[in-house]
Length: 318
Image 1 (tube, helix red, strand yellow):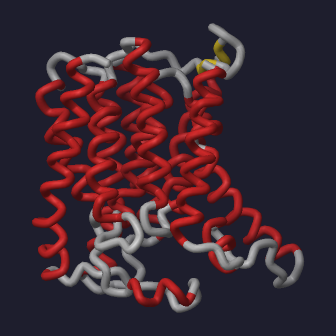
Image 2: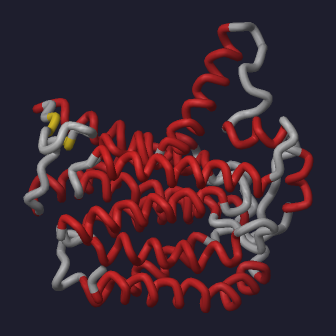
């Protein structure tokens, strides 16, 4: 591991870990507390009032850590842009809901329009200011790429938006999204360092920031990341996938994100087609396991282990 990578992990971890005790009381004073849905698992009702928007700790740590590397590692710019861009959308949604006391937050149309804009700007930058191709490396076929021509751009939008919203659905239990994504960040860091592609400062910074954040987010959480964090992490994963020409690998390393968003789609579809019956006890998938009697820590551990195994599979596929 290079000196830059080690430095990025340590600095970002320290910033995240040290800013937590300062930021969490501030969020409490702002009354930025989580409102728990009454139709969710009953065990979550005790979480009402826990500070949210903790994703700001992650964004702050990553941004500050990466600033010194902007001149020497230009390829971290699109990754930072997609991470911070989606983080800002999540922050606006969280701020309107918890600080302005508007239950809706951003409307679905506003949120989707913002996501489309951020994705479009990322795609434009990728095509015009980098030498990164939209051709996608095919898992298990060494050195072979899938180039869809004019369809590369629509596929980019589908993968980015799907990854972001899948990560958002994963953020429903203490430490779940953070635990899963820190393993994915380590995977991308290994690939980035090994291939010397130039994005390792940001992948390592996210790794360190998430390790620091998890000190406050594991069960019982003293702060939630909110949409500020979950949307940002989804943007990070999607951006890394494209900068490494590995978006197809997201389906492997992000199997948990995929399962979470698929469970919601299947639940809604089955409910409508069957006239009100449910496929799962509750969606997203982690809530189904909760209602089956599993503890939050057990579900988080299971999903983290699955992610680790799939990351090892992806290394073999690479």
